[in-house]
Image (cartoon, rainbow, N blue to C red; front, side, top):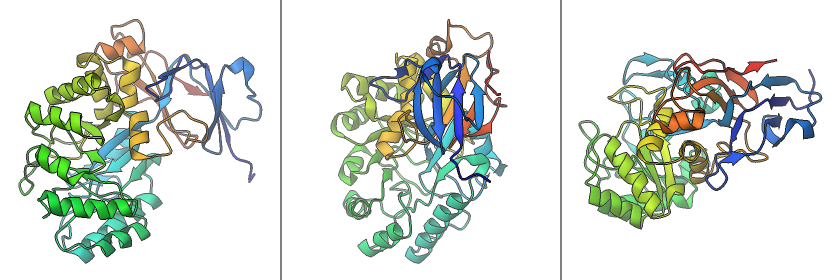
Amino acid sequence: MSDTPQKLVIHNIGLMLSGKMEAPIYEADCIIAIGGKIAEWGYERDMDLEGADTVIDANGTALAPGLIDSHIHPVIGDYTPRQQQLHWIDSTLHGGVTTLISAGEVHMPGRPKDVVGLKAMAIAAQRWYENFRPSGMKVHAGAPVIEHGMVEQDFKDLADAGVTLLGEVGLGTVKDGKTAQQMVGWARKYGIQSTIHTGGPSIPGSGLIDADMVMETGTDVIGHINGGHSALPDDQIICLCENCKAAFEIVHNGNERAAVLTVNTARELGKLDQVILGTDGPAGSGVQPLGILRMIAMLSAFGNVPAEIAFCFGNGNTSRQRKLDTGLLEKGMCADFVLMDQAQHAPGKNILESVQLGNLPGVGMTVIDGVVCSGRSRNTPPATRLPRVV
């Protein structure tokens, strides 16, 4: 077998979305990846397409960086006991999502809450999704929920073992801002990114986290700023947008009205680059394979956001806020793509206009690390045109 890096060519692209709010559309119809990384893009006539191992004819469809779900609650493999559902990750891939980020493996039956046990489970969760990628999906997992009794050394131990995330602050026994702030500071010292639960309790045992605690704790991500499920009062959401430099995470399993309020407030403040998207599933309201696409369409339609910008909420913004190597069309970034087209018979002159009218696009293919991982989506409405491997 050759040691030469695999070369992927995708040509005949009708629209190239970059994931970058400052330049959301590239003038290009072809992209090349080598060894699973983006090498170059431009016009096919100017590029060297020779020696490709895989050639995809995009057939005039749109190409975007693979979507990122910033807020999931995985357990193990492609199974969730929360809804007794198999293959939810594969279904999410069919919604154009190529990367998932855990906000805590909180639905694990018998989840340990002692310090030794919670550290062991976090390390194990990080490992099993590192070693097993369901349907090719990238799952960043191993996100421990902080509990009373943790000390600085525990966060160093977690980081040394490869843990990079904290589960939602507030889902454990730590409910006060002062203790949470200290632990979030320890986590940050060792390169662990933090998220906080925002709004009313999600399930029995969780509690209210209001704007004062969010600001005192100072996490990197304001988890479900639109509530998970119940949102904070409008004035508290506006206060968070005005005062925080953290990511404003809007989720499918939250309050839609509060989601639109957040986007409108962020726009007025010039902070749309802080808006990122998640589903907050699996959860009591189930699994949402099309959740990220639905949020993009909803925020574009009701938040008066051009569709090409709304797509950035679901890939490039998350990439930058989360410091990922995917989600942007940049040289050296992972070749993780979703190819989409306007849904059959959907109103609008093109895919962007159709999405801004609130319609879902049809997903035709996903690519992760330069490898085709799924074809025509079984979950989205059928696309008008489909890409194909030549």
